[in-house]
Length: 222
Ligand SMILES: Nc1ncnc2c1ncn2[C@@H]1O[C@H](COP(=O)(O)OP(=O)(O)O)[C@@H](O)[C@H]1O
Ligand SMILES: [Mg+2]
Image 1 (cartoon, protein in one colour):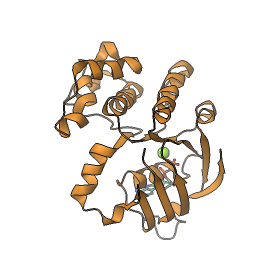
Image 2: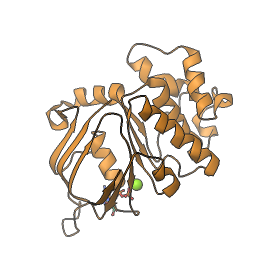
Image 3: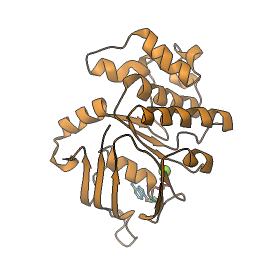
Image 4: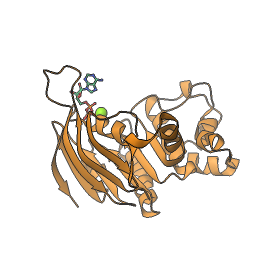
């Protein structure tokens, strides 16, 4: 349900002699679109996702969510936007190790002051195939399972925007299909989804495929 606008987004390399990591990205994603962001390793995909999440600030250019320029938000407002309005599935460090799997899934709602019923948490864990791990600690899970906990957290929290960085990377074909179908289903319910992926089968399930090459958009196909 979130509209994304990027205008001339540049992220310079910390080593100024190297070319920029993002070299002028223009992209609009409409509410409810499911976009696959593809590209070779080092193309700038994770950096672009970090800019969308407000985790990274571009050196130049506009990042706007629903018309709100992220530069205009205080750190506090930005943090609030992230906890209420964005579901993140990162490549690693997705979950808090001191909390159980179920507590991690329920955390955004607790931060909002509206804890979820246990059934809603379990339903989301069931959808990602982790219903039997609800009481486990993240340390007992694999990296791929921890990523699926993050997917479950997005589902349970009903966020309007999901940003997922290679969510099928650590999964077999069957598991990858389940996760991509869940993301697609969220988009069909109106959630905007941007999924970074190397997996052509996963990308083919998206509504739109954007290919990044050396920090630039090389192609954009619907
Ligand atoms: N904090 C950083 N310091 C130095 N180089 C970085 C940093 N972040 C990203 N890069 C470089 O930027 C390029 C793009 O990185 P990244 O966005 O992670 O690409 P991708 O996710 O497409 O593999 C890579 O060459 C990477 O080494
Ligand atoms: Mg990456």
